[in-house]
Length: 287
Image (cartoon, rainbow, N blue to C red; front, side, top):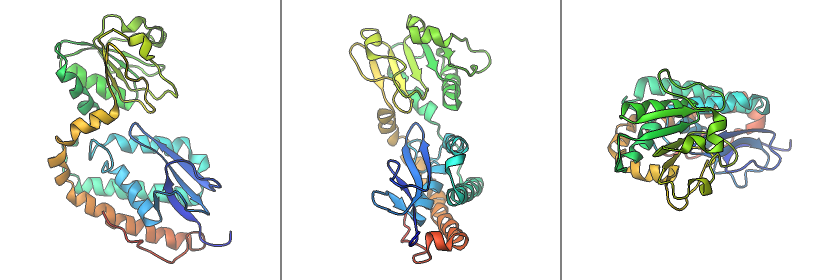
């Protein structure tokens, strides 16, 4: 090593990364890494720390302030533990702690959820709420979506490769879903899976009239003829106005996130002075 390394956030894995973690959720796909060359980074140094804390607080989610993101980040960290070295371990562990303290003292409560905002997309269906809806994927997002839809009055059926549905909700096998048999007779389809390819092909939905709400990452289906497709971007756009006033209530969290990032970065510099260098401590952090 000839000089300080760059700790930052990249849209894709940077070449020559010495430590790396791919944070992939339904709303983002980015790389936290330590490498010699900062080129292409979206955030570096203290701004990378602030970005991670804001992500953990839900301040970078379209359902601003939501809680699901914490478990999603923790899952990515747990699954990629081996690819993190001491620097990324320290960044994530200190950021988890900072975000937990801020949520406990600054969060105004009444946090919106992505599943609830997504379920609202079905309210324009002429048959709502008496709809037969299939929810595919029983992770945290899928389980809550199933509960929300059931609460709203929809007849919900669940399917998953492995995880069980919430108590009291009917279930169909994953094989029946993949074969298309479970799609007969439904009006709504929620995709909460994370497969690396489509789990439902547009050609299999053509002319069905089904309303498809896709919360998958990457997308688990796509638009086509004869059915309605609602992707995560459309849900975010529709929710923006409804969440505008709620974001104003999060001003204290926004300020605390900026302050916490400075504390985390000061600690990182103190712990790894030769790796990260000690030149700029604040890096011009601004919300």
